[in-house]
Structure formats: C-alpha cells, structure tokens
Length: 269
Image (cartoon, rainbow, N blue to C red; front, side, top):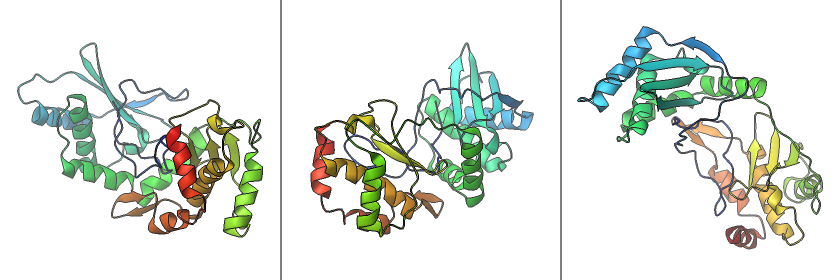
C-alpha cells in the first residue's frame, strides 16, 4: 500500500481523459526498484510515532510489531504491508530528516489506508505541503535523474516518426523555439497509459498502440502537442499543491485545431 504519489512530472494519460492533478494511489505489493536496498532502520522515536497513530486509529486492537526501514528509492515512494503478523514500512530516504509532524502524517495516512479508515485532511495537507515544497521537489527530481533509469525504444515507428511529428508541431505552434527532448515509443502497446512527459529525463513517451495505419494523424499530433505544452509550461506549486495544467496550459491546448476529433478518437480506444 502506497502513500500519495509525489513525482514532479505529470502522470500518464488515462484512456478517456487527460490527467488531472495527482491523486493518492494504492499498491498492495509495491514493485521494488532493482537498485533499492535498505539504508537504515527507523529510530525508536519514529516507531513511537507509528505506534501512536496506530492507537488513535485502532484503540481496541493490540499494536502489531513494526519493521520500518528507509530505502534508496528512485522517488518519494512510501509503502506499508502486513505480512506474517508484522507491519513492514518502507520509506524513501528523502523523508528521514522530515519534521516530526510530517512523520506523524505519513504514519497516519499509511495506517489509515491499510485498515481502510478515513484519512484526516490535516495530515493529508501536511504531507502534500512537505513533498511539494521547493526543496523536496528539487531533491526528488535529482534522485530520479541519478538513481532512475529510463527505458527507451525508438522515435521511428512502423507508421509514424515522432521526430517528424514533433518538428511539424514545433514549427506550427511554437515558432520552432522548443528544444526537442528525447522522443520514444513505449515498449508495449499500452492502452491505459497513452503518453507522458518525464521532466527528470527530458523524455516524451507515446504508447505504441498509436503506431498503426488506421490511427488518424490528428490523434498522434494531439498527444504530442499536449506533452510539448508540458515543456513550455512546467509543473508549478501553488499553496502547497502541484499545478500540472495551469490556465495558460489549458488555454493553449484549446488552440489545437482538431482537438474535438482527437479526443473523440481517444474515447473510442
């Protein structure tokens, strides 16, 4: 079970609509990064924080033994799972020096999700404000660049060349001023995740499901145009919340001439 996603880049396209601001996500068995190894066990004070939040959420239940460790994740991953009568908590090492009230928020949110209890808005707000702060966002971006690995394919598909589409859009809508990032088709024919811009690796990925002869060019152009707007309008933080699609972003997106036709095609996938 995972805490809120805190990636500094926009999330992938869902099938029927473009992504909104990040929302909490759950994973029953988080995938372990290949390079992630336990860095250190938690202090007794942090264990006490989890025990305190456990008592508040489950006052009548005996406290389950805790195994809390910090790990060198490639992002701000924070997970919890119950296994063999013990709670296993894995926290990103970026959170090791977080203030006490942030540790309380993390403990509350993870335990509340695990035991299906309501999450207190105060704790959710404290956590979001911390991970969205400029300092933590910079650190998170740095570890994604230095620890993470980006799987790249090729921009040249069987039916569409992403480099050619990018240059065409750059000339038509951006006066040729956008620097071209790494462009690549996805490794798989993903239908749930259609495309995304990874700011840490300056890479635009488009699902290979579109590289076929019956895909209208307007659909490919719209997907790439949307991600190119992320290059021009980076994610900003307002009042502790990430603004992925600003008003300027949305206004410029509406300038795409075949917007409705492209969206209609995406809905039919």
